[in-house]
Picture 1 (spheres, helix red, strand yellow):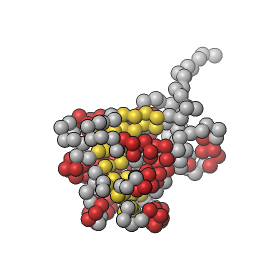
Picture 2 (cartoon, helix red, strand yellow):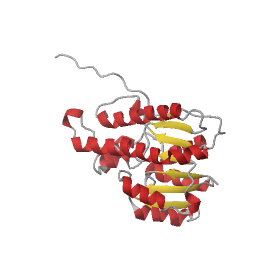
Picture 3 (cartoon, helix red, strand yellow):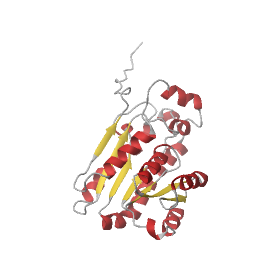
Picture 4 (tube, helix red, strand yellow):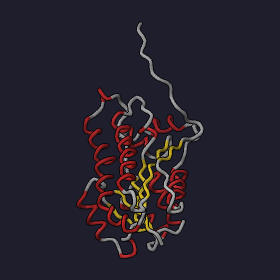
Length: 249
């Protein structure tokens, strides 16, 4: 039985991924800050399938303590899914809060590379795989995307760099880059505005957490000689925006 560690497993894509992988016969180590949500997943799916680890992904000491305390059957990680991440604010750069920028960098970049480095020896030993959740924002800029888009561009490029460095080890690396997915993403980004979330997703038939989780499982269960380098997904209702033009009066 293979084991996957999924960060950000208490909501959205991460929560869907915990269910998807557990129901497909994987052991799952689910991480997140909300202990009650992790406990609910364990109760739903079974302690033999899911192990919850409650900690802030930015806290290296708490992360290491949780990993060191994993039961024997959950320690040999075959797949790392770096899903935890967030966007904060929709303002243009000149009006954005610097603290929000730092939280995005600390969560989307620093925590991701720290956990990846921590697990690389185990993943190399297992000839395992890494799936990093990037975004179409890594490729297509939009007003207010500033630092969020920059962090996701880092995730994409880091994935490609890992792929190069891990050449010959058998470890597969994939950057999954979704467009519009209806989760708590916009609620977090806007400080809890349900109105903003409803406006963004209303009538758009967006992708769901289950859609992306199923894609992750497909990538993970491909034959070991195949590697998906990058995978970009959008709902049919979403496509590429036009260029902005500022005109003189």
